[in-house]
Length: 273
Length: 275
Image (cartoon, rainbow over all chains, first blue to last red; front, side, top):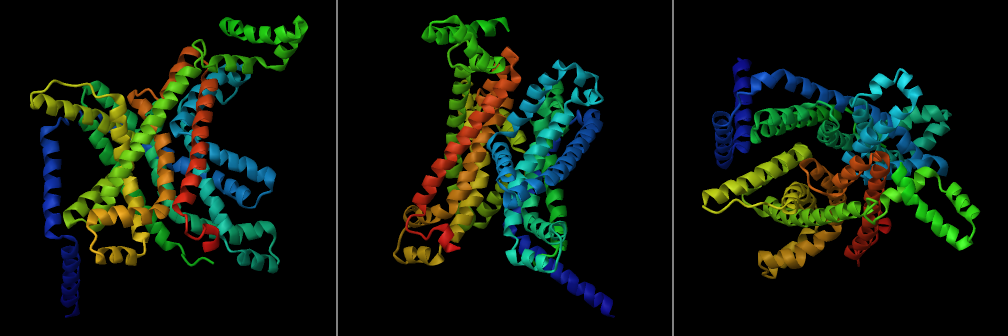
């Protein structure tokens, strides 16, 4: 007996929520948007899609892989950068500060070109580098892309972590010291976790910004999804279709990223000292 | 390398002229390392060096950044008013605008708007019977970056307007001010101290986003650098120099922003006291 009643109530609630969101003008707007999408699907040329399908998927995979690697490495680098600025002596704080200022004060495109064209043109001059095991990697473009994006993420996130480390209340650290914890243990159990929770909301935003920076690696000849769309434009002489699809793909990735990180954020305790 | 040496020589000669002995010149030459001498020669602003090209690029960069920030500010004021006081349709459309612009990479937006925008304008012109016109890269760049900036400044200004004590706006309405006068006399001046940190950040982002226009071939600092580096093969020198110029632009901006902020916050308790 209870079953149908419950589902009835649930249905009413869902309907109420939907009617709250689906106001008449929104239905019209959604219909117009659907019409635009349909018009784009019918009147624009999409016959190139099957040919570049596999390449596109590989490009998306590369972009996501670069995003994951650079965010992880960048964050690992940001922790010492933030700690040095928040608590280090002058000799640690000053270089970290300079690094963050330089990274945040220059365009990422320029940093990538500096690494790829500048450093890349230096390496071949030294025979010992050309004979070392690193050479096969240094000849490719992606290590420079990964390095550039990692340093950029570390620079921006280092500044965030500085604020997060400085924002942990002194009392917490003093209490930990009163318990007789060693410095490393205080850092590991009290300081880092609390700073991390503080930095978490900005971390989502930084990750989305990092995703939006990944297409720049295409300018140093890494074949990510942006480079695939450029190739389609060159091959087919189409202007709009590949770019519109590309924008849609990035919007979808951003949406998934924001949703997933939001879920993770909601699971982490938000009561910080 | 030969040409670089030829350009370094006059320096040594000038130094030698003062001391009137040749040994002194070689001494100074020994103190200035070869790489520094060649970098100075490459970066000199007179034609054999490429400094002039970089300066022209920098001027274009500043032009675009100023234009884009101003356009973004106008869009932002309009967008924030629309989001706060507009009807339901306007609000939804603005929400779509800010969400899409903030979710799609700037590089993709720039390509899309740069090619699509100029193409659409020309198609409209030919449809209306006018001749196709060449849209200047400067105007297109300002329009494209301003459109991107507009989405961000809409959010910044919306937040700043919401931070104004509501009583001020109610009092202005009670005085019978028209919406335009209210915006000009109360809302804009009152929201300024709350908006300036965010807008300053947007200005810094604008100066750096101009570099993305290099990808569509607009001649600004980054593209100028790349051309100079490509011709002379001195990649490291030029990219480091351009980085230093961008950094200088940021640091000078920070100084000016600090001044503007203290001016906008005049009469308010300082941030340190407020805490």
